[in-house]
Amino acid sequence: MSIKLLDNEAFYGYRVRRTVNGKLYQEYFSLKKDGKRMVPKLRKQVEMLAIARDEALSEEQIKVKKKLKAYRCFNDDGSVKGISYLCKTEKSGTVTPIFQVGIASELENKIFCTSFSIRAHGKEEAWLQAVNAYAKHKLINRKTKLYKKLVGSSPKKVRAK
Image (tube, rainbow, N blue to C red):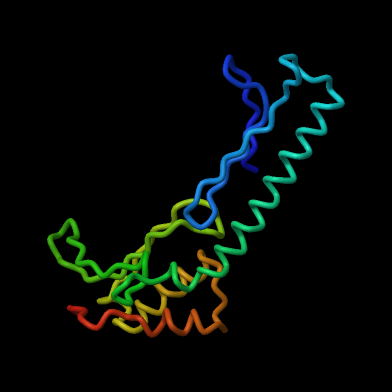
């Protein structure tokens, strides 16, 4: 919920704020009438208006997010946003090629970061494991075209040793 009760010198009321498709929506619902604070009955009515507006913006946010999911998964060059090919230097000095997944998890509502060794799993299996972790945390079904496109977006230039 993106509703906040503001009570300061400048304003007394509810603020509804959400970003939908990159555009910030911020609306204010005053709890003052004729310069005086409203009685509880009227205050509840204004609160319900603010909640209804927040729910409408939330629905729009979800709709846009779902519509743009495939677009948001890829960079302009066709690589997957959130999966990187890196060469990690171990404490022993050994250089290990990995696929690193670093994304905002929609499953756990926090940042998810893990890596898969190309040396240990091979390029194809490491990529598949990285995509599976990505799909799990981005709530992408394995039976979709988007999942198949993710699997097919493995980087071409990868050092296996």
